[in-house]
Length: 395
Image (cartoon, rainbow, N blue to C red; front, side, top):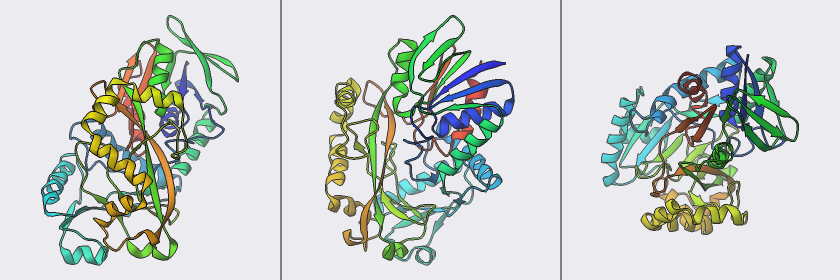
């Protein structure tokens, strides 16, 4: 029986481990540096189930998100995990966005989405009386979920099937042999036939430390901040409500989100984070900051997207800037209705030209599999990504 070592105990590492233990062909060990699973990206996202509306047809993201949401919903139903397929509205807030919205619907249909529907004004007002819209698209298949419950169930199944999960286990060193690798951690030394890198925000550094080669991409951390709707104003919206996305960026813009616990939030922005696991403006790592700003690709990105970067940073500092973006969709929203919400950090891969890598990026290197880029909808698509890895990357 081959031994596989998975580095990273977020939803991707757990999904890969889950799919592998069910095959009953491998001995699985998952290493997580923190004292709990999914403490970073996986545990700090919005909990939205994305169905593949906006992704480029034929891309890995498009293929895996469509299959991934179906798998995730089935998993949640089977294991009684909190979720709600509440539907999403995508709203064109001005005349010029209506063409982009129509193209978005065509893209969704090309990706295999069913039930997409443009709403007339009467239909929209019945669902969302406070929205300002020139045109709106109903995406009935999207919803929300408790990803922490998903991860807990994946962990439970992995262990019940004989897999091993090692918490508080940062990797000290990996020694490569001809056909295997030894993982040295605080707990033990283990030899593995295959190593799978699921380290998210540190995927590029993990790649370099294992292979002794320069990573083909650089992870640039972008913090996404949310504002929470105060309880007395929660009725101001009902669905997930999104603006028409800018196709030049992988970020979906400031939107209105229902949470599975009943909370409602507005956000996120996309602010450069001065620490890879930096959830506040005051979280700063000199090493992480210098690693980003001296990367050729990041300098090229800033040069080409300076206005975007300033706008996002402004929304982090000034509440009025954040609210102004939200008012494009719901004009009646104001600062008095809001309080500080959650935040997360997105591991966004960037190439040396400063281009944001939109699609998932998974590569092989000797006996290793590296998930270098799997941002949103990585959580939604995690079970499908695991299938893809087993079918296309596992030797």
